[in-house]
Amino acid sequence: MPPVYLVRHGQTVWNRDGRYQGQQDSPLTVKGIAQARAVGRLLAEVAGADLTMVASPLGRAWQTAVIVADCLGRDSADIALEPRLMEVAYGAWEGLTAAEVRARAPEAWAAREADKWNHPVPGGESYAQVAARLEDWLADLDGDGPVVAVGHGAAGRILRGLYLKAPPQEIFAMEEPQESFFRLHGGPLRRRSRRRLKKGCRFPTGGALRPVTGLLQS
Image 1 (cartoon, one colour):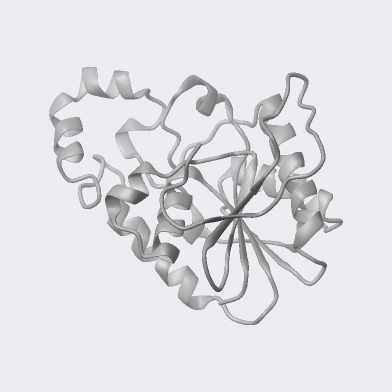
Image 2: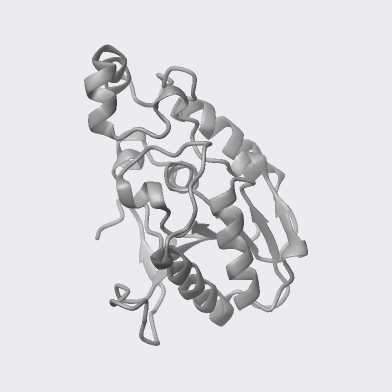
């Protein structure tokens, strides 16, 4: 498998408001745009010139990928859209907060919580179904050149879990950072990030790769 640099889209309006997005969409916030630029600049330090860019076709991932591509000196036309990287579909819950779902559909919430890996949201997908399409995407990767893949939070956790061969409970506990990227290649999962973004979207220089062998800690 070639090196994969896994990026989550920047913060969106629905992220800020705590709403399930799934395969619906909301635009990047000012903070989200700054996060995408920060990740793009980090990638420019390590990814090299001979890389391939792929992104989920959902608007927030595409917008992030375009910003990252600009930081890498690449044209947005070079970004391939990959539907298998799309976020978990949350069906009837998309656009709602967790509190709203629990109030409106307590039985459906409880049924999913009882078997979160296998039980799909009404009208949506299970984690197991998403894992199958992501595993298929990983199996199709070939060549030696690095791949920058811009995707989502839950789908990104599942993808990292597949790489680590982690059990579901570890995948559920993983972080979903929006100011970092993960490198998947030939050993421990590695995360690179800068210190937390300051007010005004400024960020310092530096930041080192650090190995992650299990759960990702804050």
